[in-house]
Image 1 (cartoon, helix red, strand yellow):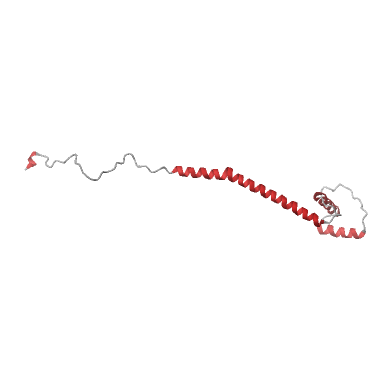
Image 2 (cartoon, helix red, strand yellow; image 1 turned 60 degrees about the vertical axis):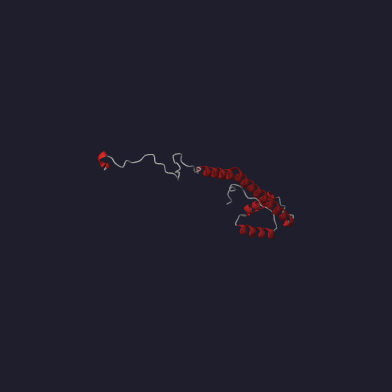
Length: 138
């Protein structure tokens, strides 16, 4: 049974026997019941705005054009979103990280306690006694 249509009654349609045979083959090829096959066909024509009487050649070209236009619009939308993310999130974050790492390295300064040793004259401020006791003067 067809799901959702279990309680509905059957109706008869008057169609030519050759058409009925072709329709039954088509239904078997889709692995659907005859009711579901007919319903799918009607939904397809209604959703796509296609009439079974008109030739599909130029109509299919317009469908392809519509699909390619939709794809292009969506791609352009995705590109715009990616550019916005790049401008508002990625680049500022990279710039902030770079400034943090640059600020993390303090400039190398000399220590205040370190004094320069002057080379040249060596002035002696204190001199060691040669003799500690007066008896040692000899």
